[in-house]
Length: 226
Image (cartoon, rainbow, N blue to C red; front, side, top):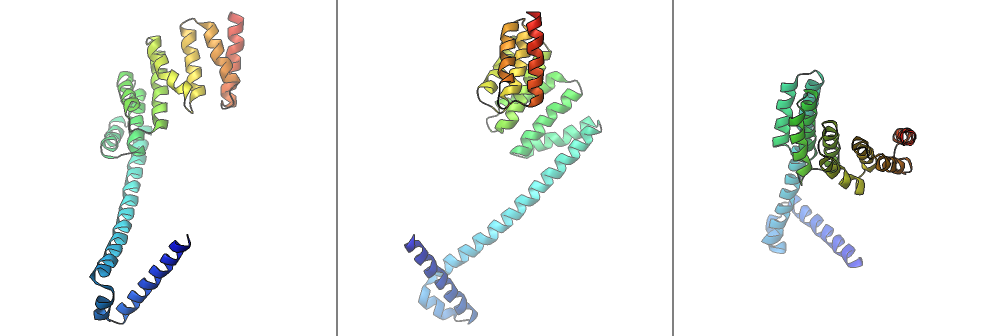
């Protein structure tokens, strides 16, 4: 640590000396004293600094442009101008990367659902779930939406549980996934298993108060049925 500090002090002193020599226009003295490789090194440092600033400014502008495009698409979606919003979302999904691309794909599915194009929405959601580069949180939401869609449309039980089981095992959405799984068990007339899932929600340390309240209501209702 001491050696590193000493080296830093020496490097700072050297740079100050070089700068002072430049100010005094003693270029020949610099050349003779430090050698060509030091001058090249200083040039590279300056170039790297300028390049980093340029990249950071470009990145900030790009992020702002993506944010503006998303805001416009969302406004169009809220106005029911589906085709216009989809055009922007599709462009973002294709040309952007990271969270903007993932959210754009999610919004494409939402637009399809609002248009009652449920099968198209399911295709987009499944592709998002299968995308290894998508953010885990976005993939969780996609899995919940797709599971809910399949549940509402009487898809086979193994398809629904296949989406929910991984979320129950390891995700921030475990409690919501359990609620959907309990609904699946009710649909399949497996009331005991449904009640067991609701019990887990009611005793969960992470479930919201409203979710726990719904679980308790369902436990009482299922108890009466049984």
